[in-house]
Image (cartoon, rainbow over all chains, first blue to last red; front, top):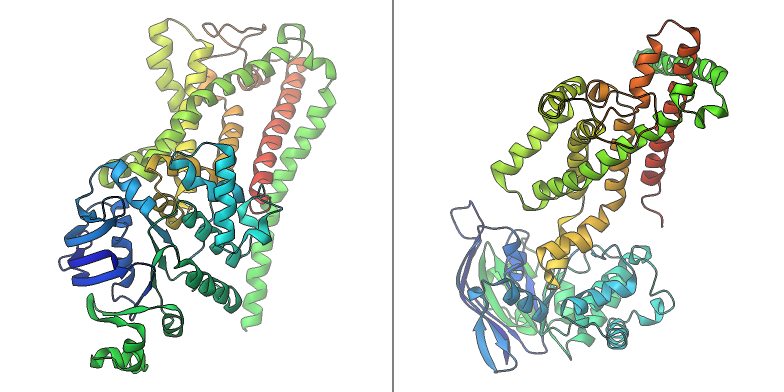
Length: 260
Length: 269
């Protein structure tokens, strides 16, 4: 079942004449990991950044087609491209979280980092906050390492820990979807392994879309894979099909390392 | 050959560094000897009329503090506007104006305040002096705020937005916190700059021999008094000017060093 569905979606950056994404049709399935792969500049990050409309931070973008997100209350799909009001944006971003390439801990304590989204969501009760923060840190497999220093600055954590903190921060607000934009490309292999395990663990509760440059990573953790090239979606299928017998020649060439 | 050129360049740059430092040392040593010679603790207890500097030091601080209270919030808000909200032409115009203001001669700012405050109100006043100093301070605060905010990675802003925070919340909770140390340093340096200014005060606040807290009249100022005292024929007045210069230099140096100390401890917590 899809939680997010893109229909004939095109995206154009401000001041550019032709679109960076052309007629993309893709869906993010519930409790699955969908990987977006393709060479640099193919539009995979642009696509990911459309899914929570973080692009809107910089005005002048053009969206076409639709991106539908499942409203879990009504069980209906709603087009997020219709969102205009500030409070609807806030709601959207609480439903669709995002993790960036470089860890982005806020300059505050570990506890306050994880509690930040919760406070914005209006949770003020202290015991409730503490419970949610603890659960989120446990979900992000960070609790044991930080439970004795929740009041310390998050800047003192290692890169891998910081990234897991960001995941905890995103998980804390209980989103439906989390978008990962190359979450391990700034990390060492051990931290990368920890994050990959974490992603597989997290998909029990949340649907995941991940942009990655690392094809082994895509094949290791994802259930579905989309191969993109120059703003087009070339092929979208179950991961094993994409990697074992792709239908398109371009996909095969990329997977086997003949270009890219 | 290359080694030789290397040596010549190294020699020349060392020499020019030494010349620069030499003059600085000369100034400081002269100031130290002359200032310390006429320095006495009672300077802090008496007002100028009784041969002390108390009213001047207090007055200078009051002027600078009022200027800071006016200039810092205004400058920070303007800096936040041009870095975070302003787009295109407007922000660029304000940024350029602020840069121009930064290099405006301080005597011109004094003359400007003389024209728009002193003349209409009918006389020099502490308020006019504080306004002149705050105008001096404004572009420095705008510039540092602008620069320090621009150093905050855009991913940090996006991460805040991606958690559902609104733009102003992200700026207040995250961006300013991340740039806090730099902005504080800039403000301290701006403060150090204005506390040693003479020209903007020369015909706005003037100075006074008496202790005063009344901002509507001529206000005691250390820097202007140094200027006056140094021009007087008596030896004792000039000694007092040296002592005042010494105290002022130590103050400015202390503020500057505090600022640098903050910057150095930026990473570690």
